[in-house]
Image (cartoon, rainbow, N blue to C red; front, side, top):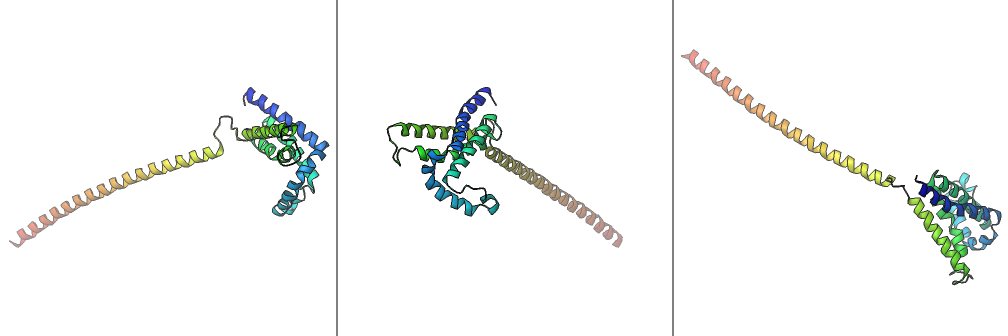
Length: 203
């Protein structure tokens, strides 16, 4: 990882770590906007997850805000340190959903031309930033590219093997035909000699 990438990730992650700590300490400002999401998401997650995992889900919007705050702290540390950085960046993007809802100036009482709009655009830009970080492979091929390259290489190798087997089969077929023709000539010669011998003996 280059020094520039490390510095950029650390600066980006710092916002989420601070934001996550604030959400854990004081979740109330985000609870109202998160309430509809909690009512929709939590029952779906509870029915989809195994009972052992569902037991760890929050019970209300306040718990969901705290959970996203914790996700921002963990994701921010992951992004800054580079440990599971892409997974951490993806988690940060998901964790921004409640905050985007809370700062949305178009769906509630926020002023669409005032501070609410500025906060929404800031949160939107940060979400885009971590989405880009989640896709950053540091110039290395990702797993999908490696899988395609391996499949193409195997396909080319199979074609080469098939062509080689075809050439070998044609050579073998030609050799067999040649040997068969030679054996037929030899058999014909032997038959002619035998016929001449029998003919001479009868005379």
